[in-house]
Amino acid sequence: MMVPLNLDTILVNYMNRLTQQVNYHLGYPVNICYDHYASLAPLLQFHLNNYGDPVLQNNVSFHSKYFQVAVLDWFSQLWDIEILSSGCFGLVFTTLGY
Image 1 (cartoon, rainbow, N blue to C red):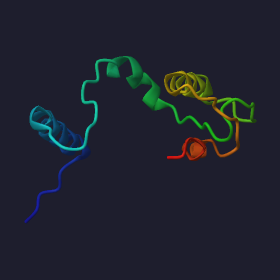
Image 2 (cartoon, one colour; image 1 turned 90 degrees about the vertical axis):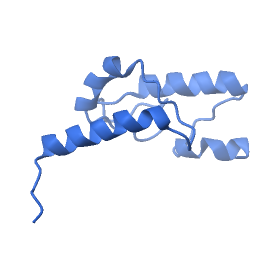
Image 3 (cartoon, rainbow, N blue to C red; image 1 turned 180 degrees about the vertical axis):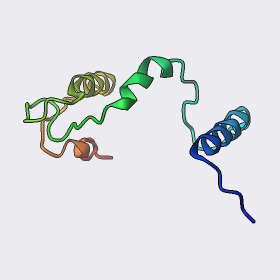
């Protein structure tokens, strides 16, 4: 018979498994060094909506578009490209030929 676990137990077990596995992580290349996570953790309590073009105002004031624009600016400087404003900003890579 399977004993039902509560959510806290499930999360603790999962964290323990990940903590052990991170030492042997080989595979999909990701950054597993999160020195900044504690600073960002409080932001996880908010549901932010960045719909639409990041440089245009919309009727939702609860967003993080300031950070989104900063990231886009960083990549535009890195790749020496001009970021075009559009309603479908997720398609920016199509203008780069990716």
